[in-house]
Length: 285
Ligand SMILES: C[S@@+](CC[C@H](N)C(=O)[O-])C[C@H]1O[C@@H](n2cnc3c(N)ncnc32)[C@H](O)[C@@H]1O
Image (cartoon, helix red, strand yellow):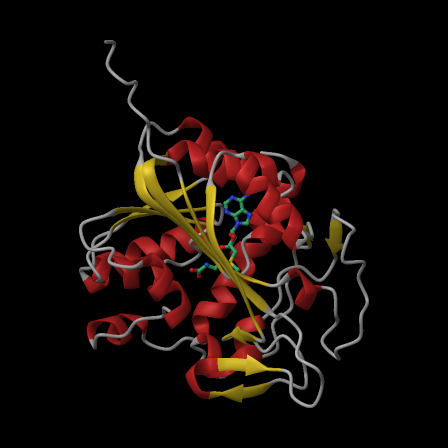
């Protein structure tokens, strides 16, 4: 594991514990039929029933289990020990079957012999990748021919502004971006938008710094295409699902977080792609 990955693993371990402590009884949530998915990914993923689905950087597995409940055969991969521990227990305690693997996601995709009908990633995954090319190649590698890739992600434009809405980061600077305060308590900050129902006992201070990488939209699309995927659709949205990224956020129906009172900016995007089917050679005359 590189030093970046190791730092992020530790930072995510601490943050994941803090996040889950504020989410109340998640077993009861799932037993009561709850789902953490948003309509954007549900629509793009289509019918997942009976499909094998790889969930990249699945964190504590809430979305993975929501997909498993729709009938997908889910494998979730994440670098955080705490996230995978939590996901594995949640799967057991809710009796929603899924496989969870603690691993660095690119290395895992490079090594596995498994192949999937769908590869899915969402909401805060690209920032952690020092090598977007390798990630995209890995996703293309583990997809079956004809398989579908779906990414729903916060827009890189939204990451170029600070919480007060001031432009602070160069959109085109890739990184690494050192974050001495580590992964923060964005769950507590977002409240029910991200499933926090129990207030934090005390403000969360992450003892472990993190490091991230900014990827512009052009880089994302070009990298996926270069990895051999055919881009089917790319849509930008003027809101963020769940995340109170900015102080001025106004929450609207469906946990959609808008920036009111200024010209609309793209705050989220969703991309769907396909691994081209194998073309069988035409029979010799
Ligand atoms: C914002 S969370 C993604 C949330 C996720 N979509 C969900 O369903 O809850 C980002 C995740 O990326 C994971 N991560 C960061 N770097 C990673 C890496 N190199 N390999 C695997 N997982 C990584 C973190 O541990 C964290 O769980």
